[in-house]
Length: 563
Image (cartoon, rainbow, N blue to C red; front, top):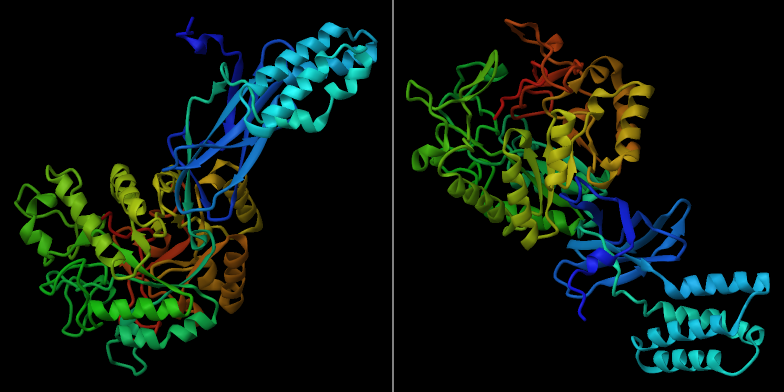
């Protein structure tokens, strides 16, 4: 009779599987060549011996690879496997009562108690013959011969050494009886990234500030001439802020002035003009072909070029004209611009992800990423991802990495801890951290203990930045050159990835030009940083062309627009 409900007869429990993120909702992260160490509680009723195996396979593989798990104290079991290919792979656990192990264990006890009987050997022979029915080739022959030896008409104690043969037991263990095995209810996932996802050193610069002579707008060719210099310092990622055309409508002047002069170049994060949008480049920087050339030149030096993904527009962006429904309209029939009260950013329009045309919007944003991937870019720094829907990022990153598993996404999410962790779980390869706001020994100890000893270590890859173009922490403002040296060493040694806004950091730039707003002195404004904790930072507006000292101006901490 066929058992129609075998699960009712399963006797082994599997619990507390680790690693497992969000009850199996999210994958853990590894890079090629790293191990995945899996543990679980595995137990059953009574005294029968339990056995279990760790099963793993690539996402597109039909068959599982099995690894025997070893027992730890208190019904805990452990095994590991190494990930060898980019993409997704799966793992789970299977457990069962091991009749052969139980028989051999009890046989030893009977020998010690001098109670071994011939029927005990015949019981073992039946178990071994059952295993032989699942084996093939030479293994099946050896198991049948083993069972026949136990059935031989000899004294039981003389056959005990045959029964306890370790080599034969190892063969039998390869063919367990899994008819009533318990399979863990979930197939857990591992996202396998390139090694650069775990180990990387980032150097940020503004291409328009790279001209060798003062007063000229830099180009991609100028950046190319600086590659050897950047690579010579040990950096393997060159990060460029947005390289796209900058809007002219409501362009801000120096220090976020509402009017701009004829020589004011505007913020690179104000994306879109008559020359194009996110798939175009600023004409003074060069051409799309120049970007491709720069990416190739960097690759020859073992470096990646990272582009900024800032999904927002200026009033001049082609999307405003072609897809007005992608933006939020106010009652006065104007489009809602970005703001972080009391500051306003009239030169930036956030995208409205609640639009009825959200499918078309998502597809267009994916097209932007694919456009640059097809030109050789494999690394992206994503601006303010915490202001866009979680579901969008999970979809976009999943779509991209299903085709290009070597792509890296760094999430610039200076936001609440839960939101930062959620973005990492959803697919961001690396994440900005609170490192810039952790200064004392105890603060650093507590923070990095949390990152490395909780489940965050399975999905959150920190990228440590002592400074950025718009973050100049108080420690750097008042600590002088020793503070810059100390923070660089800490960033480079506390984590596997770190980055600097290069020109200002190399010059030890520590003098923000403070502004005033209705809220009072900006460097003491309570906004930004970690919730419930003043960030102790001066936020800096985007620098203009020229040296790194040009255009640095402190603004409200955390006062970047909620775009």
